[in-house]
Length: 88
Image (cartoon, rainbow, N blue to C red; front, side, top):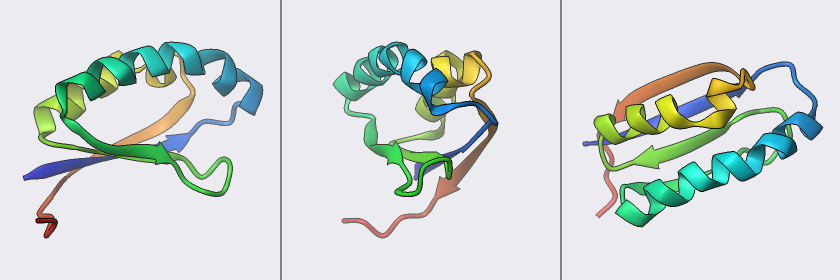
């Protein structure tokens, strides 16, 4: 079973996100190397948040615990949901 993480942005200027982004990218790259992130990215309308698909809940929770966007208060709400996908 895969796990999906939804991020809802806090009320912070885009400049702050861009300042933190390099640190976020380092964490993301570490997880990408494991092959356990299946997809990640922001929604098309700025400020609407982002989502990521992980191979399992444990990995998703570990990622959120290390993500500078979360640790530095740029994410107002994180929702983690197990997903019964139909992707082959």
